Length: 223
Image 1 (tube, rainbow, N blue to C red):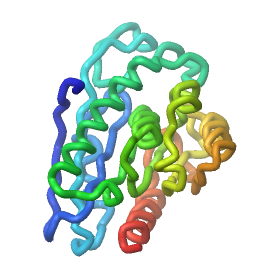
Image 2 (image 1 turned 90 degrees about the horizontal axis):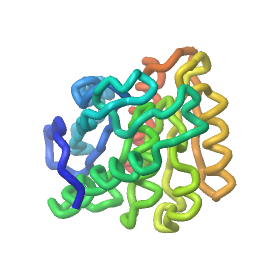
Image 3 (image 1 turned 180 degrees about the horizontal axis):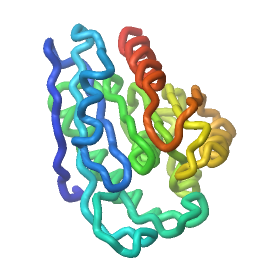
C-alpha cells in the first residue's frame, strides 16, 4: 500500500450514503477546494461526504525545482508533451487507497465520485479509469488526460460507461482548451462518453460551472 496522505473530511448532515473525493491543483491543498462542500448546495438528503486530500510536497521542475504540493512533477511548460507518468501512478495509488477505505467503511463503490481540478483532474481520471471498482462518476475541471500511454494499456472495462463531466475555460492559458479537446477525443475513441461544458474563464472555476456540477451530481446520485 502506498503511503497515506492527509485530507480534510466534510461529513454529511444526514446518513452517509455517498462520497466525493476532490483533488486540488498544483501548489494548492485540500483547503483550497473545501469550501465547495457548502457552495455546491447539494441536498442534505443525498448524504454526501467530501474528502479533500492534500498532495505531497515535492520539487516541481518547471518552477525551478521549488518544493510545493504536487500530485506529480511538471517537466515542461508544454504539459501535454512530456508527462511524469510515474508520479501520476503513485498519486493514483494514494487515491485508490482512499476509495478502498470508503468501501471498507460500508459505502458502495457505485456511490463514490472522483473529482479533480487541473493536476488533480489528471489524477482523478487516471485513478478512476484504472480502478477495479465500479465508480459513480468523474468530474474533470480544467484538466487533461495525463498518462495516455498508461491509459491505453491499463484502463478497465468495469468503468467503461462511467459518466464524465468536463468543465473548461475558453481562455485557459495553463491547460489550453485544445489539450482538453484532444484528451476527450482519445476518450471518445475508446468509447467513453464525456459531457464537455466551456466557460468564459481562465484557469479557474466559474460560478456557472459550480452550479452545473451541483446539478450533475444531484441527478447522478438521485438516479
